[in-house]
Image 1 (cartoon, rainbow, N blue to C red):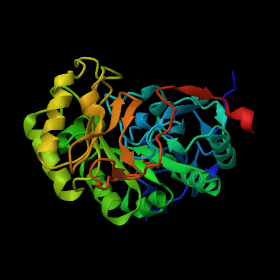
Image 2 (cartoon, protein in one colour):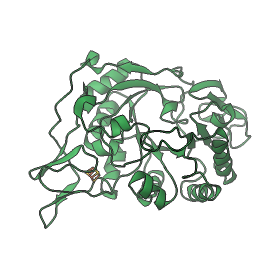
Image 3 (cartoon, rainbow, N blue to C red):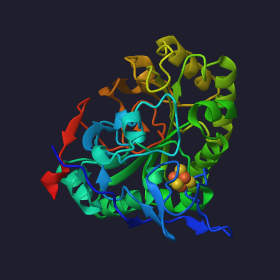
Length: 363
Ligand code: SF4
């Protein structure tokens, strides 16, 4: 077992001093205003004198190789393996967080792995991973570290993926996403009330990030909505969300509806019935969206990819496991229709495995 690490004193960016002497962090829409010694809502950014410090730079809560489908990304090198890691803290406060032991970490004992950007990139290459994912907690709050890891990965020919809530400011998002190849962004609900009450945040900045990613970057984008019974799964809300999605992101951005399981502070809600995921998928498809998926369930029909031209099954999926493959490059094998996304000539063969990695073995 590794020993816990001291916090890093890496300089943080995206801040300025206010006339009243407080320091305002402008990395995310929360815009924390800090006195000397104070930490932001995310806990990992701290004012030390007249500097901002990212205390988790080079610190990780652990590494694992996952299937890319687990992020979830269904149109980004299907079947490939991705070296996944996170740090600690989060800039939202979701009552239903499924990774709360990491995102709400207030102790450094979770951050057992020292991890330089170069070591991470080298480990990914030696382990045969197609990409590295910033996941488990939101990479926005460790943006300086994520950017350096992404640069090191690109030097080694490794792709980079962010799994994020999209809660980032206009000031920071351009530079953050410039270094990423793909992102899965949570659209957690479609009302400000949901974001206020259950995430301690706001919906509009997330919508702004989604539009920015689609219209102003080359980042491959997929979206995930965790459906929570009685909170964000009404027909009315799903219709409004799907109308917005079709009008602003278009038909080619994949959308994943995933199942909630009682967790963290939201233990009084039941798990999401499979029929709810199917209903949400049907609503989204009825708006003309081409690639809509159910997730966290065995649902061959809802997890597979279909050709928007001839409607035949192109990629068969059962949870994270791929079956029949009917793509020729990035085109439908049957009718030649181009399929949005990034595809190798053959699917990867990682399967559903989850393999922990000790980064110390690659130092
Ligand atoms: S990144 Fe952290 S410190 Fe900065 S505004 Fe967001 S929550 Fe506050």
